[in-house]
Length: 93
Image (cartoon, rainbow, N blue to C red; front, top):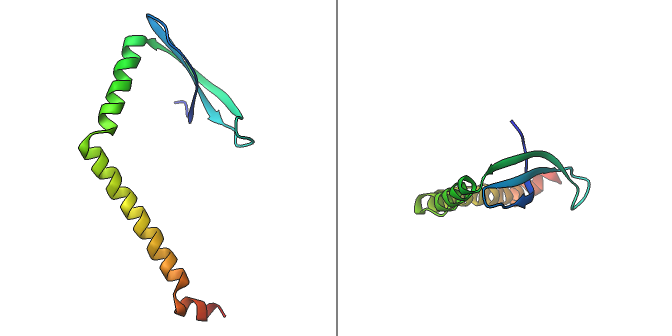
């Protein structure tokens, strides 16, 4: 298994395409080290890309994503409210 959080470079060809995968090193904005290269038939790459776009833009996926973000925001809001409540402030004094 290869972990990558960036596509550093993509070279499209008529028959095959090359994707260079990279990982941020954390030491700067553009400090990315290559971690792997994928050479794949261009038709397969296009099919995968279309599938990803189709799946991520489906009504079900959009609804699930919105629900997850709403849950995260509620959790954050509730935590902030608890931290700023008068009882919490008086306890810390």
